[in-house]
Amino acid sequence: MPKTSQPIEYSLVVSPKGYFSKREITNMEPNALVAGSKNMIINDGDKVATRKGYTLDGSAGAIPSGVDSSYDFISRMGKKILRSFQGATAGTGKLQVRTEYVAGTIVHADLLTGLTRTNYSYTSWWDATESLRVMIFVDGSTSIRMWGGGVAYVASNTATTLTKSGTRTWAEEGFFISLSGRTVSIDGITYAYTGGETTTTLTGLVGLPAIAIGTPAFQGVVTVTSMTGVSPDATPDEVMTRDNQVWYGSSLESTTPTPVIWGSRNTDYKNCSFTTPIRVPGEGFKLILDNYTVGFTQDEDFTYVFAGLDDIYKVLFELNSTQAGETLIIKKLRAGSGQSAISGKAIIPVKNGIMYFTNEKTLSWLTNIQNVFTPQSLPISDPIKNDFDSFDLTESTGIFYENAIWLAIPQENLVYIYDFDKALWQTPQTIPVSSFSVIKNETTQENELYGHSNTKNESYKLNNGLSDNGVAIEFIAAFAYRQYGNRASLKQYDQYYNELYMSLSTDVTVSHKYEYLGSELIVDKIINGTDTGLIFGTVIDANLGKNNLGKDPLGSTATQITELSKYRCIHELKAVDFFENQIVYSSGSEDAQFEILSHGPDIRMSANLPTSYAR
Image (cartoon, rainbow, N blue to C red):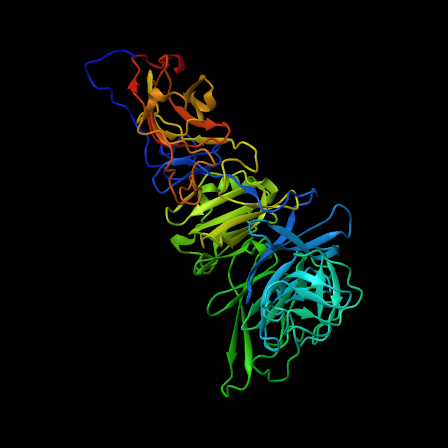
């Protein structure tokens, strides 16, 4: 590095403003992250940081078939996590429940087996007879299924009795006491019982084989194939509950699609009948739409029905003047072409609002559709429009978690995150999941995010560890092109300042791409984590096993990496004339961790004129 009596001034990039794919990559602010970036997040320290990895939740999947649906069922006995998937051959699909008999040992145990359809739509409903919140789920066939959420663990059994572990009774664990034909499910096989629910031993079973201690025992699933007041060939594949009335709809994916929506009585999820000419409040109902149902959602006042490619309906129940009758008022919104949701799972509750994927390949607020001519009506996905336009968004879904919306795009093996606190998109994340669950950590009492695989019958704990299930993560932070205030003049630099936080085990490549796509020249320079001469501050080894991940987070979307050392590195380069250039940071190191705080060159205008481009 040449000596100088004058301090060198560097044109630094600081305070990253998010990820963009819509705008011209060479005509953006230099602190924008652009296409090519992946697996980086902007944390609360305004640094571009590597994300955490993910680890297996339970055993590895043995079937190359991803999770088709999942549901976080909030029951009286706590949250139950369910997932369903197809088997290796036809008719071998499963519905499983996440269990934890031994603390820290997760087992996804079979609730139903031998399934041909596993893409369920779920809702919950209050069963007043059992004084229990139950789960209703449908699959596009004539089967309407109900599960009470009861889970216990076997302590002992005979051929006719089943004793659970612990002192709580079977009823206290959520098992039915009044329903006719009550069953218990073990390893996907159901056995009828007749009594003992108010004790720890069920009685009246027949032919129960020897069962291992600690085996999960579930309340058996109840299946009905016909409902009162409903066409016998109805095959709903979308459900929702409002005011304890279950709404049933059929999309084009169901066995026999129909534009009819049925609603149940608030006392019986299987009964959709109602009196005429004056319908009594709480009775069933029937709506006929112009298109097949896609999905349902609701806010405080209205229910919204998405239908076909374009239609959105707003439904309201209104009492008549005597308060003894109730009328359904349905209004089609002026949504516009392609503004219906792409599927029921693409409708995502967010805070006090509703977001959804449209058939125009946007992520929009439902409120924007109702105010389509306002300046605020641009889809929230507009900054990443080019990405979404090129994607297959089929089966995409999302979840609201820690003031951000996490979007699973399974057909692309990607997750996208919009951070509401910072009002920005994070870079694409290469996480192959089809849906999410939120599970409380019983040790820390913190809610943690999980994902269900879109390629195997397995699930993952997200934001955990330094690899993706044992595979090193490829991190890329590609910044927008820079012209340094003058697009039409040649520039040059021979020094580049880098200020990062890194672990000792990380090597970061800094790529200098001169001209568009590096068409003039690409120069790679390395920052080695083992080069302790670059460190400013105390070295703390952040390797797993030496620090508590829960206490010292490793770069989630909300936190900074606190264990890393600060590095300053000035790379010396040969001066090259250029109009514009791009800087890309990358690393594929095992257990890589780094944060980019600032960077920039000792830029100056070239003494050379671009005469070779004159014609």
